[in-house]
Image 1 (tube, rainbow over the protein chains, first blue to last red):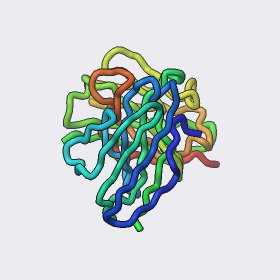
Image 2 (image 1 turned 60 degrees about the horizontal axis):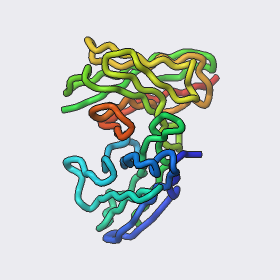
Image 3 (image 1 turned 180 degrees about the vertical axis):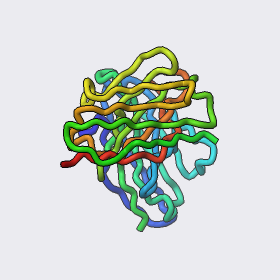
Image 4 (image 1 turned 90 degrees about the horizontal axis):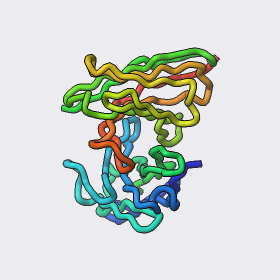
Length: 111
Length: 122
């Protein structure tokens, strides 16, 4: 059971907009800690997608955007493309565990 | 470019030991905290351990505390994970990852190595 909760799967058609949620609690996201997002393409290592809630590292298309509010965060992907099919993970810090924690991951399928 | 390359994975019997290595290049290794992550087959990501850049501060996930030891050799740009008393549930791909910037709760992990598979089975 992950500390941060994500929907296990999501799907969308090419060109659509999808949103992946990441729900935490008062000991992590709700305490104001930043949320970061990673994308893991099949058979590869995770790669940073969004840092500090909203920041896109160099090379990440502006189709990807992050937001945070209260005890939750979201990753939005617009103009869905076939190559966006991957697993997406959120990450934050938990003050109760004194450790960084991940969401369980969301498998995004492009129909 | 910034690169992390892990090695040392393999098949080990329950109760056995294994030592993973991660060699870093493309950045000043001694300036960064470093970490080990793992991903069990078909499962999500888990932070296993992290180590400070120069002082010997370390921290471990509860699931490995007392069995795993993280260490580093800044002269060799290398990170290590000594895994003892291995269990079937330790079976996973193990990744090393750099901890971002100045240490604090808002850190992220970037980049990650390609991973090395550890299988614990009799």
